Image (cartoon, rainbow, N blue to C red; front, side, top):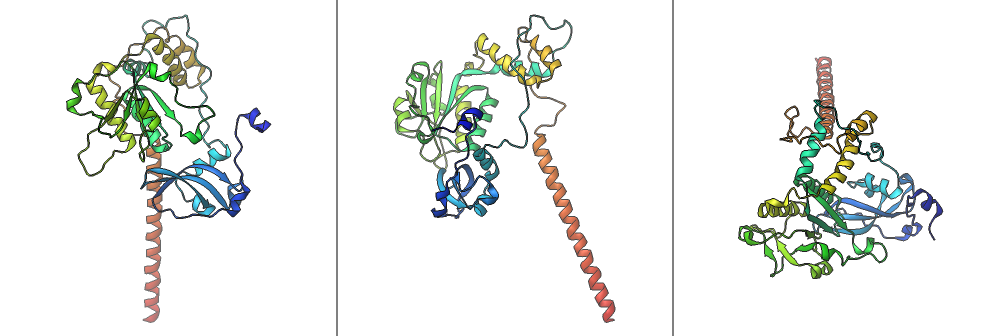
Length: 361
C-alpha cells in the first residue's frame, strides 16, 4: 500500500531498512570510483547511520555493483552527498531558477529598427542547425558521468533527441521495448560482432536512413540481446590500439560526428512546427522569469530575429566557465593560505632556534 504522504507530495520516502544491522559490510574501495545511488539505509539521518546499501561504479569492470558499506566509508565516496540527497528526497542547496509558465506568442510584432537581443539571435542560429533525424538511445546506462557527457555532446553537435532506457530492475511494471518504435525509426545498434558494419572511410556508400536510432549499451556488456534482435543494422567504430573499446561518451561523440560526415544534409531538418515548439520553450527559459523579458520575447516567437552568423562571442574568453573559475580561485586561496602558514611556521622555527643558540652562547 502506498504512503498517502507520498501520493500527496509526490516525493518517495527513503527506504529505511533496519535489517541492515545484520548485513555483512564490504568497505574495500579498490577500483571503486564513485557511488551512483543509495538503495537503503538503517536511518534517515546520516549522522545516525551505521550501514548503507549502495550502488557503486567499478572502474575496472565498467559496471555497477551493489554493496553494503559503513557510514565512514560511504561519506568518503565521490558523489555520496548528491546520492544521499536524492535518497532522502531533499533538494539541493541551490534552488532551480524560476522561469514561469511557457510564453504565449504575442500578436504584436517587435518594434521596427530595434535590434533583437543577442541571446535570441543565438538561439535562432542553434535552432537552425538542430536535427531530429538522429536519435541517441542509451540502454541500461546508469553512469551519471557518461550520461551527462553524452547529453552535452549531443547538444553541442545539434542532436535534439536522446532517450534513456532503464535497466530491467528499474523499469515500471509492463515497461519494455515499444514495438511501435521500429515502425518510426530504423535501429542501428553498436556491436562488435562479425556482421557489424565498420563506420570508417570505406562506409562512404552507406546511406543514412531518414530517421535512425543509434543504440549504445553499457561499457561492460554492450547492447542487450533484446535490442540487438530488433536492430536493423549493427555498426562499430574502427580501433587501432590494444584497447578493445572506447569510453561510452567518446564513442557516441565519434559515431555522431561520423554520421554527419557521411550525410551532411542530416542537419537542419526540423519541421516548422518543431521549431515553433522549441522556440517557445527556449525563449521562456531565456527570459529567466523577468516579466519585461517575457513580454519582449513573446513578440519574437511568431517573428523570429535573424540568427547570428557566428556563435563565438569575442567579448568572452574561451573556456571561462564561472563554476570552474570559482573553484580555481578557492584552490588558489587555499594554496596561498597553506603556503603562508608554512612560511610562518618556518620563521617561528628559525626564531626559536636563534633564541636557543643565544642562550647557549
